[in-house]
Structures are given as C-alpha cells and as structure tokens.
Image 1 (tube, rainbow, N blue to C red):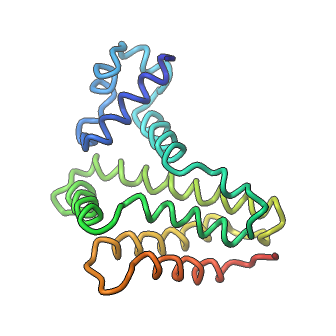
Image 2: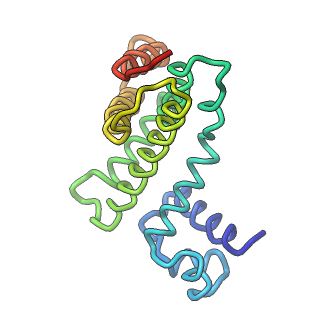
Length: 193
C-alpha cells in the first residue's frame, strides 16, 4: 500500500469513527504511522488532506460510472446519482442517529468553528460531484449549457431537504416520495433529450 493511501485510509477511518474533532495533521500522521514531514509532502495543508479524504470517500460510496451509462435517459441517471447522496444518511433510526450527529457536530451553537470547516468541506465535495455529473450531461449534449454551480446548489438544497426528511417519522414511504421529488427537481433543468 502506498504511503499516500495509508494516510488517506487513516484519516478516513478517523472520520468514520466520528473523530472529526481530532482530525489534525498530527493525529492523522500518528494513526498512519508516518512522520509529519511525510504527511506534509503528500498533503501540504489540513484542508488539502480533508479534501482528498472526502473525495476518496465520495468515490467509493458513490461512484460516477452511472452518469456515463448512455443506455439510460440522462434525467434518470442524474436522479439515480442524487438518490445515492440521499441514501447515504440511511433510513429510520439510522437516519435519525446520523442527523443527530450532524447537528451536534456541525450545526449546534456548541459546535466548534474549526469543526464546522469539516462540514463545509463535505458540502463542497458534494457540490463538485454534482457539478461533474452535470458537466458530463452537458458534454453528452443531454443538458443545455448553463451555470452548473447554481444548478448543483439547487439540487443539493433538494437533497439536503430529503436527508432531513429521512430522519422524520413519516406515514408513507419516504423512498417513493424522494424519487418523485428528485424527478421534479430535475425537471427544472433544461434537458435536451
């Protein structure tokens, strides 16, 4: 395993264990069993490290390959990928626990400002991911050119609302409502096909 991969794996493990609060360069270096100089060689700043870890996590949890599958309609591919973002929170009690952790760690007034930066990095990686999907659809001429940053922001606002919805007790199936909501959201985009 490469040194870079060892560092990424150590930081990923720390995030998955809920140890974002201690995700310092020093703590990651110790966990990976490398020196600070070695870690700084691969990741000059904590932000570069965090961005790389989050990109790696998104790549493994939500691969982009579906967006390239031109056998499916472009809108369906986008809905499917957005659905994966929503599904990452889980359902029922799992979603409530995840949402509670998100609130406590990043949103509550007691959350330290430096930890909020981790959430901002998560959100930026999600936006980049969605912008990439939109760029692929534009390149395939399935979507008209436009401001993909604004489009991604809109779509992620819908996704975030659905993530919160998953944590709420609902009388009907959230999954059916989610797909309908994502389809409706994508209708706001100028698809050509």
